Image (cartoon, helix red, strand yellow):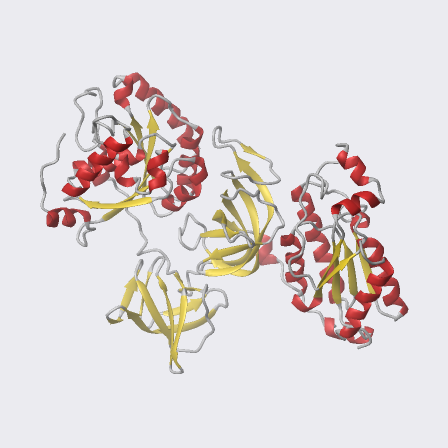
Length: 633
């Protein structure tokens, strides 16, 4: 097939989304080498959307890379990155725009490689239809099933099963029917409303734009004909109003505007609205948009509104109508698509971004993880890269949200690793947890300040961290004795002791060690509230957990004391014989042997127990407390 010369202006007109034709967001996904980029390139070519110079460059690149001999390799058109061309895979999501007389399209070409599943999830979160490609020679692969599962979780309700490379199986109907039968079993447990199976050859254009003469047994529309006529009507404009506040504009003392994109619903001047988190009501005074004031606006408009009253609202608040409010809770159940090389650790503090707001959050429980091959649910203590789990999530403060099924914007979030700042997971909210709305903090008549005043001291956590054998417990014991001699009120929590009671159900896996520190941190917080100076002696190998405890009790109440001793010195001391057993393989997950230790970056005190005696170090710690006015207040 050849494309006639088309004037540049005509090509540009076809490429631009039309204001008068409905726009369909389409995702192409599937396993690597199933032909996604080739299909997109073929669609653009058949729609005559490739400039002459682009076509010439494509011919040249095809010869240079030599992937298809003398033929044009359409995959090179959208595999824009040099790294993609060299590897022959798609790394990032490539977006292309084109129009037909019936519809405008935004096409997202997602990567197929497992390593870039996060990019596929990003593309799926905005798609209305997903074209799931399958290589006719290979059939359904694990990555095919994973992409189908992710597309379903992320709200894609219409699937085109494009069985590609039919030319390489002699256009055999039996091959096509077998793959369709297998996929029907997979789709039965997913939430698709429609599945359209189409046999194609992206390389030769069979059934892509026009019906193929090579498959006369096929009775159905070509891929483009199906996309032009697919019914994916949404009711975004009729859904309840959700306006997440992205920015508060304080242009002057007389002007305070709340800007954001309307996620769903509509609003107009004079409407009574509520800031969901606080529940405070007001009315819309103005709706400001690019070009001037509006009387009304609807999703997906980006607007700035002003209120008739001075109510408190900030970035991350969700504006809604009083009778159709979202959930507001600090605990909810959600699906997580784990995207980090580092496994999910329940209890670890992550940064959550939801509705433009950032706050601390942790996974409190993994209810199950999903086997994408079989659809089976199994128990899990952690999630690894590309695994999908159903979890309970807790946030540091209540947030406003909907279930993802009701609203794809206000029902989604991401988790971010606090140290690498990398996205760790995509979250899809299912429902709020009942206990979040039934359990409320009970205000106490005797405050922490009152208890501290009675004890004549400043309550705090003295957190001793370091390798096993560094001397943490020995030094903490000495410090407590010296504090008691000065009539201070103290409590000591020791790593070994708490594992005989409070934490006796925990092992020494990475996940259990995170939970161990989380529980100790919560106990330490209660004791600080009681006005005590709490001494905690724990290896606590991960910075994230030490930071979590610091966040729990407050910056000024957490004193991190790094008892620094080289690993060789600790091994030589080996007071409990643990290193010897660990090196012999009798103890697994031992810090310094087969588990890492993350030394503090900015501890309040870093003290070398290899160079100084425990007694001298204890005296220095007490002197630090005295110098900071924490004793004899």
